Every structure is written in structure tokens, then in C-alpha cells.
Image (cartoon, helix red, strand yellow):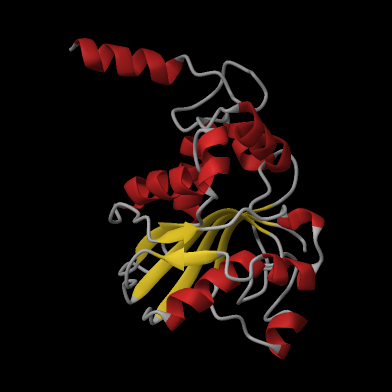
Length: 227
């Protein structure tokens, strides 16, 4: 009885994390803010590049190693600001409701027989931040979709420059021999990341997974940038 009363009180006294109104819901934003989020509506059939119908020129010229990228949102306001706050402010709580919204959008699209794995961080960087946002996103997503608990299979064994400051060729060189596996991977995997820009990181990890025995790798990302 006490728990049901408490849960009812919590669900009716939510504050929207985006506009601070008292109209928040049990999964975070108020209805108006949730409807205004930049959901991915149109994107490349392979890499999810926003605004593309069919396959983008890059995927037509050279298909990536992964099967396809499933993106929940495009990287537009307020998501860049929100993710920056998560990463620099030490507040991972929004990842919970973001994962719920992502699960709602992609529930019918993600392969059901695949194991979730997060894109790793360099251990020192994760220690400084206090968490790996991709790992938390994967765990929340697994619970929301009733999938197996994500596995820590990939290791990032060297510290790299931030990919955002590099061009496509530099990004690939930056990740050379950057990742390793702790064991033989399952046959089917869903690689989870918070933001995909050029797809270089998830592409490099996919190549490694396929080399080591995986048969199929899909990617699930919260946000896809316009590249």
C-alpha cells in the first residue's frame, strides 16, 4: 500500500527535465517537450545519415561493415546540450528516460536475437567521468526491451584524441589498433553508442568483431549527426 501511494505521488509530481514545468511524466519530459524532440524521421537505409532517402552516396560507394545503424534522434536541440550536460556534469539520470524513448521508437526494428554491447571508453577517461554513457544507455535499453544484460566485450586500450575534432581520414588513423576483445564474440550483436557522427568508431569496432567470429553487427545509437 505504502509503495503504491509513493509511486502514484512520484508519477504525478514530476518536473519536466527540459522545460522545468510541473507536467513531467514517469519517463521524463512533459508531453509537449517529448513531442518536440528531434526524432529521426528520414535517414540512409544503412548509416542513418539524416535527410537521405534510400542509401547515401558514401554507402553506395562502399557499404560499411555493420548491417545498419538504427538511430532514435537526429543530433539537434536539445540533445547536444543535454548530452554535454550528462558527460561534463556527472549526471547520467537523463539516460534512463532517453533509453525509454529510444526503446519505444526502435522496439520493432532491432534484431531480437542479438546481444547488446556498448562502445567502450578508455579506462582512465571512464574513471574521471564516473560512468560510460554508452554502457548505461545499453543497460537501460536492455531492460526496456527485455533483452539480455549487455556484455562488456570490447576494450579500448589506448587514449585517443576526440573524434569530433578530426576529419574522416584522421579519425580512422586515430583508432588504429585502439580496440581489443576480451573473448570470442557472439554471432549476432547490437553495438550501442550515444552519438554516431561519421560512423568511423562503430565501423572499426564492427570490423574487429567480424574478424574475431561475429556474423552480424547492427548499431543502435541515441543520436545521428548530419555528418
